Length: 301
Length: 307
Image 1 (cartoon, each protein chain N blue to C red):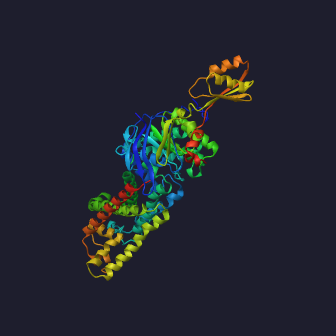
Image 2: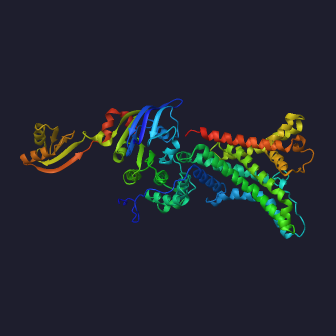
Image 3: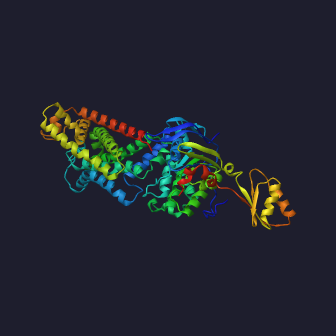
């Protein structure tokens, strides 16, 4: 064996790989898992973990605070935080944390591969561009799901522990489980679609991050102006421009509950049936994913 | 089955005609793709990988159509791009394992193959370090490793020696040679340096301006063009005259005579002449003409941009 160049005495020479070769589904799945780990900075430096993990903590803060209060203060505060309010504009910072998490992670998931020019390495394997884009999108949505469903699960368990009978709470409140899971999934898919489509437009991390945050700041302002000044149907439609209101709309509809907003609140003024927000979120999500796939499908190398 | 076959392959970019009705037919081996910068080498490789659609014409890799069987082709070929393509904050092990999994290897197999492949390309303890701190030579090794990790039947290497110092260049060429000879993996390597191709490859494809200039075995290019250098103790001019008399093409000066080797076998004649003339034979050396000697007169542009 002429392995002297590498100077290794235990070099057995090149061996062919005769083992199992998995298909495109497993290839896509491994890209998805890799993306999901990268979203939280797992397997990366501590610095890459701090921001996503920190924002995850912020999103869970009301639930954690609630649990601690329930554990240490001997008063009945069960149902002080209702599941349907958790990611609504009633509490400011859980949805804001979601938005910042999206703005931090989405550019990381898509931008890195462009910045470091690793895309050709993926596309020269048995993986299509659409599968690449889908795996990345799914990773983003799943990462968001951890931030939406996690605190809700904490809250639900907390409430169950606060009351005397765990089983009794579950029996009374099991109807909440469906809406909690449903709204968490839709929030994640909806946000991920917006964030990933915007992030795909620029390999520069700073641009992409600002690009993701911008609509979440400016659209609500425009939306508020439209709803409050134009006292007609067009003005009322403005409520859909605010992604946070869209979330509010379908979440309360899922829970079949009414928000504690005052009469002046745009959501109350616009007065659309909850189903419309659900429908709108689905359309935006589908459109965002379709455009993302198209973007990567056309991308030339 | 031919390794690569193209028929009238054409790639028209909005402003440039990158490939102009290219017809190539090569058998498995170590193939050199030579051309000046901008001759269409990278474009050809990307089309063969199914990364770029051709404007016209057909291309087959390992008997598969690049238009309809791109995925099948990509699952059994490897690609080492010309440009830098490594994320700086990952270790070589992590990165290559990940790409092995994307190539369809199960996780444990991906880990094993990664360790083996990185060792083959000469990366040892440093494979656990972040790639941002690697030298250009180490980065090129990782790039080669990720192309080999799923044990492909063919690898495309786009300018694998780019940016390397002479020693690194030598090691990379040695790796490419081993990949082709010992690993038994067909190689298509592009380069604008004829000297590299000559030393590593056994088949040569020369393109210029998107057109095929020449395609043939490297031996064919140089065969018949070499000469034999004969060093003697005696008058080399007299030896050359004697050989010319016997029908060989020879010239001599001082102690050294040159005998052309265009398809003839002059060895016996040289021996006989030297014995007859009672000279002493000091040295016999075959001087193969290099590819650059062949192309310089015909293809000044193809080699003009040599670094």
